[in-house]
Image 1: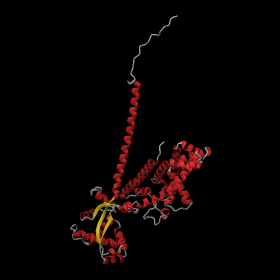
Image 2: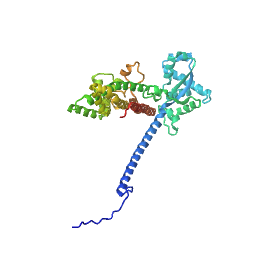
Image 3: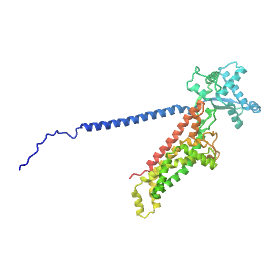
Length: 448
């Protein structure tokens, strides 16, 4: 019996460095997927740039205003005459209009003005500047020593005047209305010639309050910022300890049974509930049942606390889970109790994640509007800062998202600019809170 050897077949030798067809297809697919990702990121960045550019373009005009600047002199005789008149505001308006007309004649802009011309100037100034007589009267009643001396008044002009001077509105497409008539444009041009009208920084927008539906030039967001501050204090004081305590119990102490499983499922479901549902709950419980003050930051804070709790609980539990089990085992091995292990070892290591989740939850609550619609914070017009610290929680006020919503729903185009400017202020607050969260996380984070 002989051994038969099988004939050897010729093999085509290939280098391991050479790409075969399957490898080429796989590499091509990976490149395509990479390009898809780059394209998706690029599209997202383009939309982000468009969004930011639109917000800045529409909102930055709110930071400036068209103002009428006049060095007005009111004599004692004129002051007594205006205060003795039946219509005191109209008397101050007439005196101011006479002063403006005299200035126009002195500088050669207008000559030989009749009483009828002066009456038209007074009516035009009312439309151009709004309630000028009221502002002037308030000043002299609060500062009687200024009577007889030059006083520089810097009064905001109407939003349509700003549109005519700064937004390129032409006379051809101008339509007269009760707010501004076509003949008023001649008065505006004359006031520009004598340097009575110009643009300046609008401090009222940052530090003022809402001015009602007929005065966008005097509207400010300062009072709403204070209202948001007091509301966030309520949310922070209530949501942080409750969320951390609930998370520690569920993660470290609670037995694993159906009851705790049901609690965890409900927490996850509450995080997905629409925010307006929490507003309905707050209206029914805090206002109608508990009779807490409507439109108060205290009620808004309680409503937003309910909405924020699930978010902070979920992030806190994730932070506690991220602490290695060996930390717990080592602490228990050297004789520490379960309570000492959690509060001395686990909780400090989870603190960066807890702080980050809390700040992100607060930022989410700061931008909410829907729950506040139902507790009256949109319908209330906040015109003054709270008198006391406690009053900041209990007195009716507004908040930034509600104020922006109110401005956006008004007809005057001046409020439209104010709404965009308020969005910029709100985004600055949200951006600041997220930056603080990132800094705290990187500052206290430990790697193992």
